[in-house]
Image 1 (cartoon, one colour):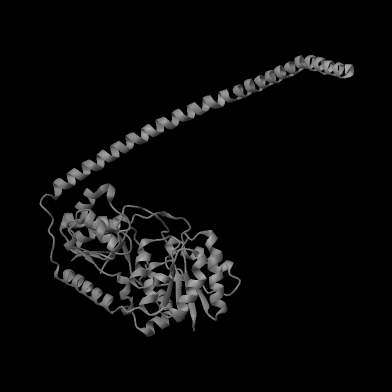
Image 2 (image 1 turned 90 degrees about the horizontal axis):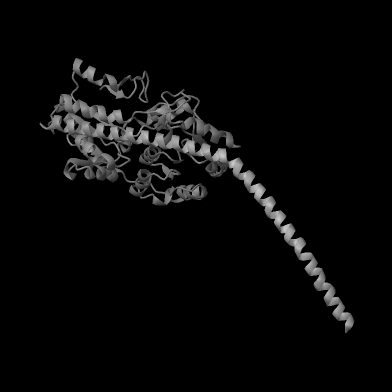
Length: 427
């Protein structure tokens, strides 16, 4: 098995594994053809390039080309007819703006599996037949089988020796600053209840460690935080034996729950995938988006939450992996490349050119309007002092007029008053 990502890396989440750049995928296939290409991951099927750290030690975030993870394999299938299999990734956004392109890319994948109903509906909306889409549970539910209990205990002890009776908390850099106090209050209640507190980074390249150190510094009571980047096995080892997991990570909840642990989702980003997960697990009452409800929800979970029966989910995953294994080992092409593919590609390239051409034209027009706006602002700023001067002079003249009118009225008022006095004296 050969691993690929947008960038080459000497180390990965899986120990002692070399990750190749997707830029090298085609060359390596020509040198030694692959039996199949498997695309897997989280919510990866989209066009957006969000900020991410390139390495654990990076400070800056840069646009991560997630689109290459699934797009390069699509073109490999088109060009070399190598079997292309999806290992239940997620599609977080619709393809409303480019359904024709999406249909072109998704229509000849040999095994099209996704991990939730929303992802399946996006494919259907792009014209992919319902019967060709496999909806399978999140493959994270199979983590129970990756290592023995002893291996997980050893991995946990390597990070925190003799750790017992502990609660795990996780958040990412998007947590609102105002919610930190609610988190600290919740962790204090857990600490006062006799639990050790573990602040667990789950995605170092997303900046988890930095924000968790902020939480650590805000706590006036002891909290544990790993002193080195953790391996996948170490993370699973810590989650597998906690008394409760509290956090925003979907896979933090998946991992803890599949090992029979209690979980509470603090989903301040209000993601549909996490809300759907907690509904699937029957834990809707333990899904919160408001930190003011966090402490009470954690307390309720510790008292009342029951383990989830994963037997049906595990059976579905076994069937899914059996299907993947058969397709990889047999090397069969389930959906051959259509004979009209070149013509379709030509039409789509023209549409991309047309969209780019229109975009450039709009950008030029926006630039012209910005220049005109600046010119108009210059005129306004030039005449504004003059307008203020004339307004001041006008106010002075109006004030003078009012003074003159007042002077003209005084003799009349005095005469009237004198006449009234004479009348009174005569009486």
